[in-house]
Structures are given as C-alpha cells and as structure tokens.
Length: 277
Image (cartoon, rainbow, N blue to C red; front, side, top):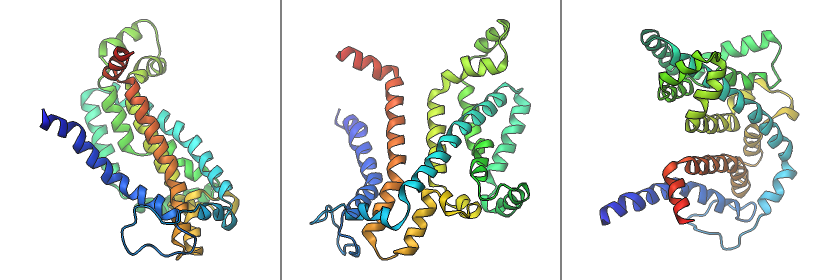
C-alpha cells in the first residue's frame, strides 16, 4: 500500500517539483528590485518583492506589439499545423503496409536532418519569392506539418481507428476527407492536443526564423524582442527575468489547459467525478 502510494503520488510530485523549480526561481527573480544582480544564495522569495520590472518593460520596448505579433503567428500556425499534420498522418495510415513502411523510413530520415543544414537554402528561396520581412517564412513550417515527428504521431494514433469503421464510411458514400474529419479525427483528440501544444510552443518561442526573415521593427515577435532586451540591459537581472516570465506564461497556460481537457476526456476520471456527484 505504501509503495503504491509512493509510486502514484510522491514520485510524480518530485518530478513535478524538479521541472517547476526553474519556473519558480524565474518568477522570484522577476520580483526583485530593478537593477539588482542575481542573489548569491538560494532565495525562495525576495525580501522586498516588487513588480517594478514588469512596469518598466513597456518603457524599453513595444511589449504589447511584440506580443500581438507572436499571437498572430501562433493563431495562424497552430491550426495550420494540426490540419496538415493530421491529413498527412491519415494519408499515411491509408497506405499499404509496404508503402507505409517506406514513407515512415523517409520521414525518419528527414527528421534526422539538422535544421541548420537548410537555413541558407530556405532563405534564398524566400528571398527569390519576395516574402522576406513578412510572416510567410514563419508560417512555412506549419505548411509542412511543422515536423515529421508530428506526422508520425498522427499516423500512429490513426492506426488505432478500426478498418471496419473506415470501410463502413466508404460504403455509405463518404469521401476520404469527410472520413478524416468526421470519423478518424474525433478519435485521436489526445494526439491533436499534443500536436497543438507542441506547435504552439515552437512558434511562440521561435527565435531563429524571425531573426533571419524579419527586418521591420513593427513586425518583430516577442522572442526576438526579448533578445534585444537582453542586449540592451544585459546586467539588469530582474528585468530579464520579467521578460522571461511573460514569454513562458502562455506556454505553461496552454499546457495546463490541454492537460485539463485530457483529464476531462478520460472516461475513468469522468466516471469517478460522476460518482462523487
């Protein structure tokens, strides 16, 4: 009984504390008075907490414009990533086993290619297309499903959809696009949430693409603006921590929201909560 309790609660709590500790100390560091260096000892909470660093951020950079630009990119990229990755994964699911194996190997090979190996080629293509200093290069990864890993995740999830359901839908005269939307996609909701969270995190924290393709200051995303803030005030620790908290908070909130949705969709959790009611 004790070992089961430890494995179910204590161990997950320790892992959660391990990953939450950097977030806590980042938030604590942002509450120190502006201009102070990092503490020399472990500081659980600052003695004189203040939000002066947060109020000073809009004075040093167009904070809300950068946040709005990042939100715009994410709002376009995340749904596009989910649609392209799910369609591609569903198409991979429909292939014969031999063809599916070859495509999977090809996706794994593409997954092993370093992103740095294609930076120069991608930049030249976007320059020739005349879309540099626009958001199109930032949305290009979403048009390609973000990553082969997301396609493989969907293909693996769609593998749990019975063939009988797909065949029955085809016998009813449904097209494959309708089967994907009405039959297959609702059954892989956890995969969709996972892909959406991963896509949100990638595009929200994407720094290299805005640095390469954006030249106008009014189009900068928050990740790029945060780098400029670091160059402007490299020794103002509380100010940098405040900027990092603002950058991290949306990712944490999206993760918690997705986790909440998954728990509500879990039939065991729903059964227990229904029993309590």
